[in-house]
Length: 552
Ligand SMILES: Cc1ncc(C[n+]2csc(CCOP(=O)(O)OP(=O)(O)O)c2C)c(N)n1
Ligand SMILES: [Mg+2]
Image (cartoon, rainbow, N blue to C red; front, side):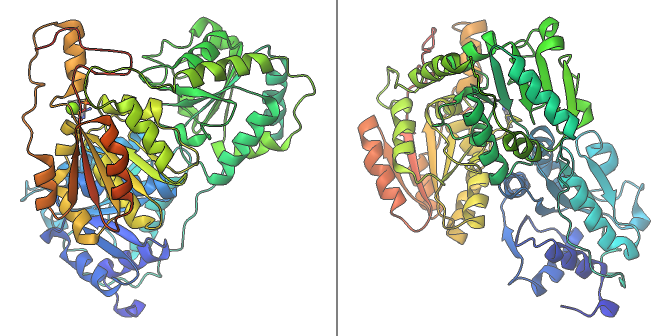
């Protein structure tokens, strides 16, 4: 490492990232931050920079890193066009509360405001999405800025931070000491809040636990499970947060996603007290803010939120406090459960309904996704990571694939297509001993398919599952409902996915019948490098228990 007296800003910045113990970062190179690339050269054994083929993917890989590790994922993109491409992950990190630090190139500070080549006012562009947007203006503050960016990204409700790097500053000398390592500060519940929450649950006839949010940990999730078991509480997880609670646990009654399973439906309909822990009670999980009745929540909803802004925001609460979800779970689990738990049989009923939804459903096509995802569960080790993006294929995955452990689901609550592939690659590079399956639709996959070569180049052990129904199926479903018989802009003409994959250096196979999947998966799991399995499905099987009405 370069002596501090001779260090440049770029070198101090990179030293600051090493101090945060960033071991993997993602980039598409740009001439606007050459000095940073050069500084990364010196630490390449310590901090691996992954060369990506599109900034959306580089930024999504960083976002997935934040989701998986709880510490900010890091990416570097060039000014203007690079920053525009990366913006999708900044949006996802904002919606999903993921710690993320995006470094973007910027024109020389002397040219700012002159409409210079690829210039963008990042404050104006990202100000409404990112938690913070900073420009490195003073070389002496380089390390402080790294600390600030990491702290802001991780603290409270985590989120994205953008740091812009004017080209001329990067090679300036920087005498500042290297940044300190920053850790997330956990905010516990006050003692009075612990007592109030537990008393309200104790007084209830049918209390329900609704979990979500970010900043969790394996210890926090284990505490949650202890708490729910001791109190026999039914537990609903927020949209795409199924890994916050072992799905096989007898308390788990389902996900509040676009669709509400029978168990979660009954639990939500009949609960007289709801403890919302971590979740912001967002649009999707509340079905457009309709799953709760605001005239009742004022007396029945207890909300432990990640930040004050979320309290009373969409539903009036009966009792609201701010705390880190994992800390709160540990504190609640530490207290003894009451002797009498009169809602036990109700919890069992909700659970039985949840289990019914796990039975495979009938389809019209040759590949049945309910059987496919049940088989995926059977074959994958419990700690395997499953990723996805947006599309109706994900409805099948979320319903039939059960998560058994914390940190096994990487899925965008923002509903961004093109997320599963980069998230899968990032997960495989970060945790090479775990199995990773990246699930995509044909539409979703083609938004990130260029990273197959990245998976091949780094031999990332990902199994890409591509559900090919030759359609932007989700949109087709809505058309079918709203404008029957008038299919527009949703039929897809795809490449040969197996050939595309093979040409990119990833061996592939095509599954035409449900029965073939089991063998294809076993074969892919035995491989050392990436593999792709295409599943040819019928668009008519648009969702579990739902067929298209207007067919071609
Ligand atoms: C970046 C982005 N663009 C567009 C959309 C709108 N959208 C949501 S799902 C979807 C279709 C997804 O198609 P596919 O991946 O093939 O999944 P399917 O629904 O067919 O299973 C579209 C276009 C989106 N959510 N994200
Ligand atoms: Mg599709």
